[in-house]
Length: 486
Image (cartoon, rainbow, N blue to C red; front, side):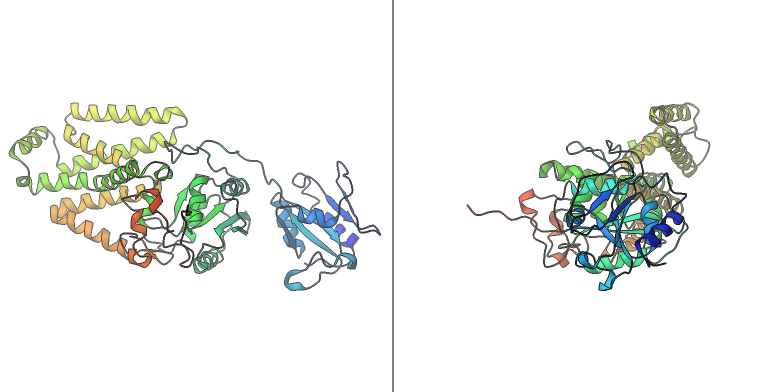
């Protein structure tokens, strides 16, 4: 239904539509034109002084013209205000309809409001850093936009908002740097967001799954972050950030393998410590997926590759264990997963206590009861700690699943099964792409950016050498650091 008729006619239609929305609409703004060029704004609670229409519109940070009553309804239900303006030929140069056509009767303008109440800006509990800001995203995407804008005060930072969900009508904000982002990636994510209809969704994880280009892969195609400073840095590197209302987790695209292994304070610390910590994380990936599988393959198939003294230690540790090493490993791994899940679900500080105390008690009791050897308890504990060292939780969860695949391969074929499993994983990763970019970058496809991305891979070179943006940015605008000549 379009706006038509006189100003009073449209007021009557809006009153009918929103007669049950009194709790949502905080203020009603009515604009009436007197004979002179100045106008008055009347609020229900109070009146303000005279102010020109031009100042009203240009002084607002987010004003958008609405063309029909359906858009007005969605706008008010989203917690925004709507300014209804009577059409006047004296002011026809200020507002234009979509495509340049005039709307008869009156015009409607969306004025961004504070939205619904929610949890404010708090200290982030995830993605902890040694150095840097501790601000975290809130559940309101309007607030999250402001947190990013506080760090990037540029007119080139663009925000496009859209609604998704037939019944939930959830807001999604697409943030990008207009002079840095690749337009084809921007078009692709918009196409994917327009490619589905759903009753509603309550978190950005649903958007991630519905727009994922690799539906059967266990590896995430989006980077997730709850830190505004990380989101701002991603934007400056040419990425696109998706903010979803009611979710404190932002989605970043496109990404590659190296993106998941970086943290915010990698760029706040000096290059030496950043390189050392990244090396530890890549080593942690290897141990997180390999330790149980290697133990099974060596004990069952290839004990000859170990020194005799170490083999005797393994034999003595398993002397009273009543079942094969495969069953022993699976029992301990699943037990630890149960303890981890229980620690996550129990609220408050008690969850951390369950994780620590439960692991100690279960491990000690299993060794005393001859249900597990001390060696396997050490291996399972090391595997768990290595999985926690991977910065991104979704990325870490992928390797937790891969670990069981390699355990089964090692149980069937020994060390050859373990190697075959690693090769299959590498083949899978080499075929993955995130919005057209190789998933194994910058190890793969580094030549596309003249190997500039390798300067920020495992080795993080000194900051003064990080002068180029990664491959995700526009090719004609990749210089991000210049030194002034003295």
